[in-house]
Amino acid sequence: MNPFAAPPAPEPEMPWAKAILVTVVVFLVAGVVGGWAWQQFSPLAQYTVDEQGGALGEEQMTRVFGPDGTFTAIGFVAAFLLGGALFWWLRNYGPWSVAIVVLGACLGSGVSWGVGMLLGHDSLNDRLQAAKPGDLVAAPLELHTWTPAVAWLVGAALAAAVISATTWRSEPDATGSKPVASEGHPPVH
Image (tube, rainbow, N blue to C red):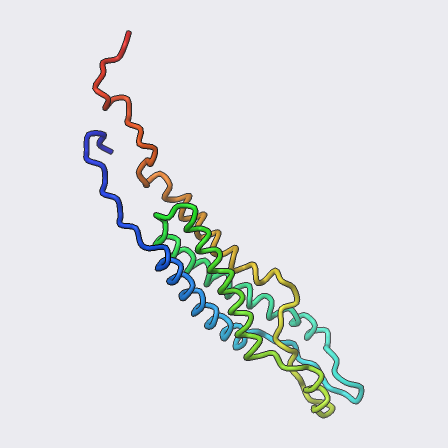
């Protein structure tokens, strides 16, 4: 770093509306794709139908929380990658870039859950009543707790934290202070 060099030219600021709009669109699209992927790839438990209704075997009981894990994995990876890219792009906004990215990730999480529920949540009772003894009926696609939805937020926040931690020294000092050696006054003895 040369203290006598000209200060770097400031990067042009993008309008707030564009930053927010791009973030919203990115996470809306990610939410739709994530919801579709959640519906397509979630391992669902299978109820075995008998004369008295449906029952889960021991092995199938371990698969009940498969959709929660799938939603968590998809959301964390999507939000980490997209949140990191958007945070890098918006880093000149300072702390507001974190807020924009994290709120966008929350939007993506909600959209992903909504799309998955629209595509894959069917009433279990109706399907059990229509099935014959010996049939296998898939459990409904659902989240059993709200914590998988937080994976989107955690992924985006972690990406912002990692980028901030690895690049904080490479940014110019915004305080405007000059190093003592460049002031031109001789030291006082």
